[in-house]
Image (cartoon, rainbow, N blue to C red; front, top):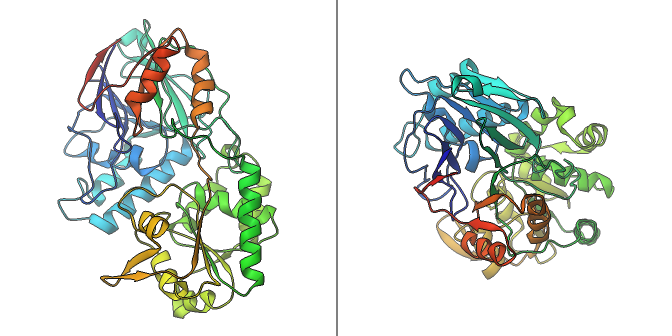
Length: 416
């Protein structure tokens, strides 16, 4: 089995892994200016997608150009989220060199997709008997529908972890799957981080929000549309907070309600969604909501676009107001600028932000301890570290602990 890393190696973004030039696992993009895509345009016999985040699925419609129609395998939520993300990419970059696909390619997803549940093996590229593979998806505990991908060619069993979390979140339970594998391609996003106790994080966030609302302030909680928005609605409900919800996360939330079996507690999710108040944005609603002394959960999580850019100018001048950053802020994003310098670029001018800013670790990825506990089951396997900013360092630490580990580069081919 030969593996080629088309993206996601020693970097976070544009994950894409090609097996024997036949099976493509993930095909994402990297959110940058301009967006970055995998290093080449493959023509696989089949595609398997681990989950519905932009850096893993964002470029998939580009695989359906011309007469190419490889079957695309994923879980039902991932299929729905892939369309949502593709349509959003078209809104932002459609009909420009920044987008490698058009609306017709997104429409073709329905012609080629094949949906699978967890734990049910399925043949791809002819199956093992036909020179292809047997693939099995396992719950990865990252977002609803996220999967570890096990690829078996009859001789070698390769486990691609995708993004995963070993601890429970309110939205999804942590992964417990540890299928036998000869080689593991493991994400390492938080390889140098120890997450705070989730219950303590939730308590600190809720306390700060409650205090701000009691003082008459407004709280804006920027959140990623897929996963984080829904997690924050659950946390708010558990702490008797009634939020407004705005942006792309509204549609994603309704999508996930249709797949209760992929949620940790569908009843709790339904109750949390029922308590939240949806912002449509019509007739000046956002300005009225901002003046209410309310909690507003809205996209984008890194402040780079979406309704959050309407709310922030309204609340920035008062120290009674609060911005709670609920996810990692990538360097160069407005969120990182606010986090580190207390300022934002608005209408082409950099403005100071007097509102208080607090950061909270609601990560959906395994931390160092989680990564190591997961890999304990694979001490005899060859581990390939990817999807991180310090892949080489983590691989070196694993080698020092007796694990056969390495960190491939983008474009590198590895023979297993």
